[in-house]
Image 1 (cartoon, rainbow, N blue to C red):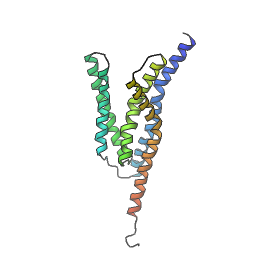
Image 2 (spheres, rainbow, N blue to C red):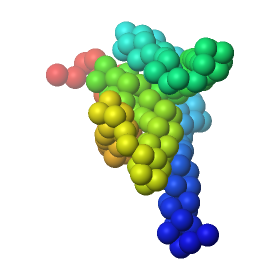
Image 3 (cartoon, one colour):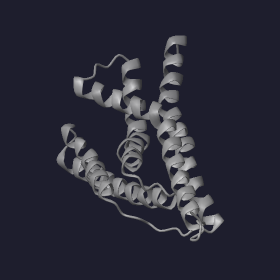
Image 4 (cartoon, rainbow, N blue to C red):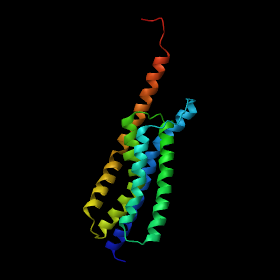
Length: 187
């Protein structure tokens, strides 16, 4: 095996594994915030919002991209069903986690559920595979390039999205606490 081939294999492995490790590190912060709120004893309620339905529609649509591949009806059906089950599981766990973390503003919740989560789960896989294909000289379509840029954008923006959404959740808790401690007889 030549040095170039070995380097290509190592780079391919890194491009496939590194995004998953990155996703785990990013998503741990949301999980830690939900666990922290639970330990503090705050009332944890799983709130369902309109943006959650929009993100569900987006998440369910992603697996149907498999239909573009020419892999046979039986294989496509199995992959779509498995991907739909995974997407629904990811979506439901994510909505529960971000609710428990206290993220309840429309904008931050939309960014988490419609950019961060698809990018971290599906985008990491897609980014790694397509980038590895580019290294090995495969040509990609314009559509694949758009999805690659979207995945890269989501991965780069994910620390900002998590930090902002958790900050908005802590700001809401402070505002609610301050309202509860107001003296009714004060001016």
